[in-house]
Length: 315
Image (cartoon, rainbow, N blue to C red; front, side, top):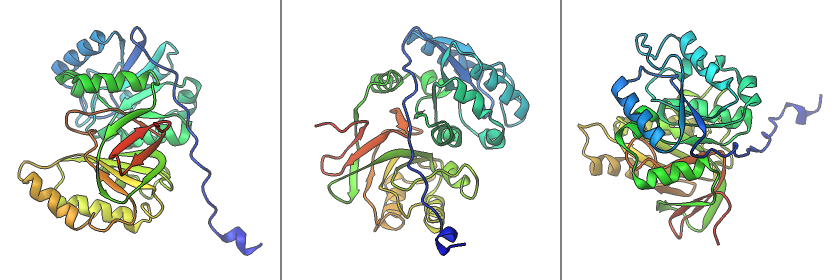
């Protein structure tokens, strides 16, 4: 055996395609793979979804509760798979996050999902699922509003335009950000999600390939020291070694933290001397506005213009 056979081989490039476009009038599924869904918020979100012109199709477990979850693992999977097996369902939006996706991630019927390619929309606890859609199906997945969360509170005009535009496949799109380090511009597929969920995937078969990617992350209710710990975990695992750049979305600090002081602690330490381009202030995550991001789609981080351009670069 040659010595080269023992050397780690580079991963093949990440190749993705956009799912078929989704437009008002289409039937869209509403699924719950995570925590139990507040029924008042669900009704408000469904009304908002209908007002956008979509026809909601509900997973059977949306009104179930089993401890921390919207039904048992089996019930959540069955409800999701029934939606996924319906060819008339053009997209699946998740009701809420919380906790639960990791428990069933290795039981998702990926061949079924491959048979019926469609848009999937969620964030928070759905981070591992969305990244697996990108990795295993080669489909762009959408980090965006959820039904019993964002739609229930009412989407802003910017959020609505962002969601509908991404679902319709209307790219390129340009988002504002704030340059913290680096110059010029870098490109790569945008990948990521909730930071704590990203770190939970390390050491598993679902850990995303981030070499050459623009890593996006956001977080909620974590103090600075925990965010520092998670970023250090990513660094020590070499996950950050070959990323093209990093873009930070909303960080919703715990109520006991002073936001400016908390950010200063993070910026002056964990993010003080990044070896890659770094931007923050992307309006995506657990606060409003929560703009939709097409995970897996090639994006361009323009550090001079302070813009993240999703899809083919704008002239």
